Length: 214
Image (cartoon, rainbow, N blue to C red; front, side):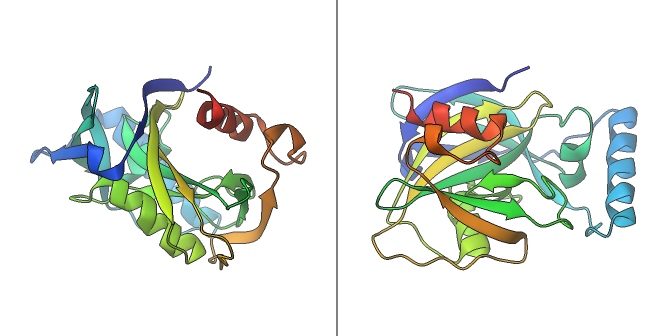
C-alpha cells in the first residue's frame, strides 16, 4: 500500500490553521494494549520507554487559501500500534541552496526508523503546539539550524494510519548543520533523486517525488 495524500499545498506557515479539541482520544482496548506492548519492546532494546501525550488528526479541511486542522490529544504510543489511529507527526525535509537533500541515518536506539536513513527532521506534535511550529522545532533540535524559508507542502496518511504534515525547509548559502544524538551519520544527497545512493529506499524516493511534482 502507498501513502495517501490527503491535501497538497504549498502553504505558508501562516496558512495552516489549527484548533485543539478538549476531549482526549480514547482508543479501543486492543489498540491501547498494542501501544503498551510496543513501549515494552522499546525498553527491551534499550530505547527510551516514556509515554506521554501527542496529537491526533481529528479533522481537516483544505480550502483554497488555507489548511485547517482539528487536533485531539492522544497517547504518543498509539503511533507504534498496528493502526496508528491518525496520530500526527511532522516531517521537515531540508534542502540547501544548491538543491541538495539532507539525509540522516537514525541511531540504533531511537524509537522509530532505527538504523534507517531519513530525510530532514521529524517528530510528534506536542499538545497545544501548532504543527507548523513543530517543523521548525524539530529542525532546530535535530540539526541546530533555522531555515531561510519554509513551506508546508502536504498532509499525508501512511498505510499504518500515521499522518504526516510535510514541510520543506530551505537553508541559506553557507549554513552549517550539527546533527544530534538521534543520528549516527548524515549526508547531502544530490538535487536529482535519480542520483541518490542505494540507501535511499522506496519511501524516501516516493516522498521526493511528491515534493518535486507540480
